[in-house]
Image (tube, rainbow, N blue to C red; front, side):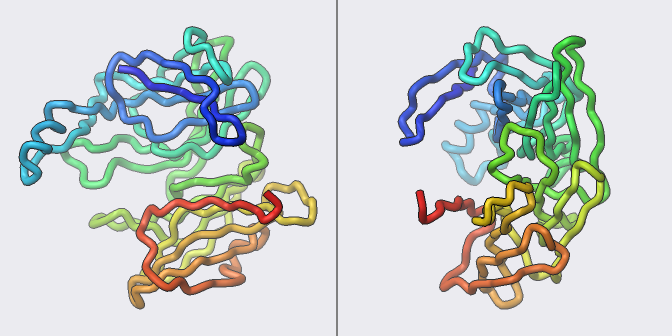
Length: 281
């Protein structure tokens, strides 16, 4: 098993690839970069080829191609940006699962990585995964150890985003979708703005029928480089009216909620992703 890391030029052409060997086929959903590093998390959600084949042969079969296997171990890999794969360094951590990282950045001899951490995923006794928390992992190159700090556990949020100008650099703010406590389903709500400098947060939490997707940060056009100087956009579906809106929130004033909302001509599915391309591009 292996993962392939590729570098694309501004036109979208792959100009370089590296193959990173793995001891098992794990589900890797996301990764992060700093100005000089690329960070992978190799966590114990294992792809089961036999189960996948059984499902293809009989779609009605009660099988699932991924399984939670904590005894397989968990680790975070740090590789020079662009490679080579031979220079990757692995840091062991406690078994967990991470779908999404907020951001990563260098701080001296360490890499700081902010993630949305689940205690487990696809375990036999769980419906939608283990307990969720917002964490800060600090990978110390000198000691080879990882410091795991709990940033927020009571109201963590998921589907994180940040000012794209801060990717790979130290950020002050992270923007997350509210995660509601609902044992019957994955229940995303409104918007949380987390301040990593002060540890405080503000939120827009609409009624229970409204469900936002990942929030996209669009920098303002006035040249202000603060990483909340801009707008947050998301598709928000209202289950009460069966309508979806493109919702716009002022990132400096999240608690006030939307400053504009555009009703769309059809339903936008949950999990739908988008990007922002300015007219000057």
